[in-house]
Length: 328
Image 1: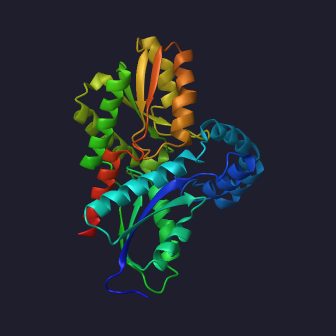
Image 2: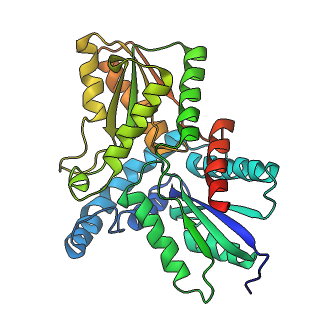
């Protein structure tokens, strides 16, 4: 039952992960992920044939090998990192006197599911709810899909809690400072490359024409980070990774830039992925391993990946402050 002095639920939502690095587990995960019409905007009948006739027959085995390369004793890096971040945020909220907050993590695809976590929060007496998708830049394929999942669950409840949904935080000063701190810390410990690549996850180019603000928010985040670091225009560059399928995606493509840089005289690069709150397959395997090989094979000499913000203190404090502003 709802009460006047109920608790405030904080739901952090990340993309998702298979439960194991096996073809069967990856197939179950991809079947859910790739069937979301927010993710693949192709007529359902046509896409069903492609998905079940081709993609789910070929991709799970290949993706399972990639997951095996990054799997840890704690399981999925994305799941472990998201839980650690939630714990760190909860601690900072408690330190700030917010002992009424209950922080939980959900995965948009896979487990723990959004529905599962929301029901748990309801059972704990939550009467206010703050949903924070862990995507700094808004995209329909990620942020809007999270809203769909939350709305589907709440639509079946008799009592709807007061709801705050944080659509993005691409220009939040705390987030930008946390990114800058991570780059500067990396440079102090590992040295500095000639060029800083800011790699964001790609989307089909048509998403921008359809009104998705993602591309512009990525550029804004990059501009703010470069300004915070005091970088000259020729010392950093935005690229987009993880292209899938044959249609045009947001450019420039990360792989193509890495292949071209050595021929222009750039032999050392640092790569950061500002759109990923927690390290995952796309950062640990694609960027840190596969794309490193691309750069070195093209003639590059030094390639370093700067880890995601994960559960680091600046990141946890930035997100805790972002959440706290929704509670006033």
